[in-house]
Amino acid sequence: MIASKARIRGIKKIEKALGYHIPDAVFHGAFLEAVTSRLNIECLDGPLRVQLLEFFREFLMCDCKDNPQCGCPEKRFALRIIELREEGLDHYQISNFLSEEYGIDMYPADILSFLEYTVHMLEAIQDIASLQGKKSLLDATKMHIKKIAQ
Image (spheres, rainbow, N blue to C red):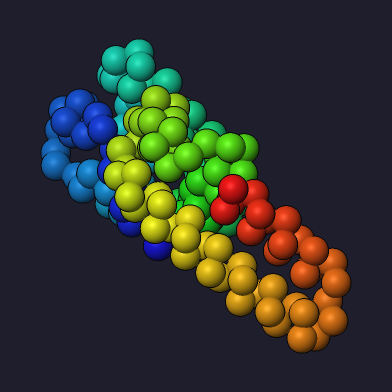
């Protein structure tokens, strides 16, 4: 999944604030556990603190019992990438946005591959919706394919 490709840029500063090493993979269980339960966010410099708070707000706010290990953060992250593409950003611009907004580094090629995969999945859903006469689902998939593939 695309979330496994996401890396946090300020990992050294976070590790220094925690006092121990953690993975730089943003959606890795150890990273999520450390930053949500053990990190004193006030120890971080302003820009990194703002990025982490925005990351928490955007991806980690759910009511699941197992939060942040529930899978919601990864789903929200994937959806955010799709939304950014549908807003007209290309894979380079999405990579830059993630870096500036959340402090997340991703290769544009990984984003492009994910978007291509998403279009293929939507095409499969479109075919099934067509076969089963689900017009509203068919229309929705066509619209999303058009926005992503533009």
